[in-house]
Image (cartoon, rainbow, N blue to C red; front, side, top):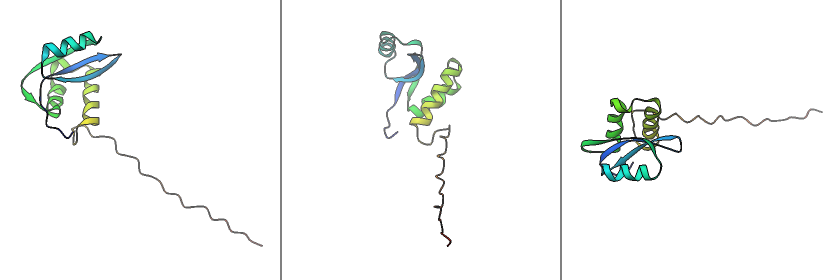
Amino acid sequence: MSTNKTYTVAGTSVSNGKTKVRFAQDYVSRFKILNKNGHTDIELLELDSAMSKADICKMLMGHEKFQSEAQQSAISEFVVRNIRGGSTPAPAPTPAVETEPAVETETA
């Protein structure tokens, strides 16, 4: 992530059966928007101070309200996909295997 944005509200919600991490500046506005758009299991926290997404994810991983398997998975997936140098390592790419071309020789 190349920006240094900070957020004062964070949490998770479920939309179309998929749990995702949510970030915002205003608790009430974000809750209303998520609810209006049909999200379920909305779990948001107002943070004590503004934090970056990386710091929020670290905090959410250890917070008692975000310990379900779906929430932990969503947070980990967000870290892997969006945060450089995250605590959860991304899978290493598989190296390309070079094969030598087959050489045919004719014998008379």
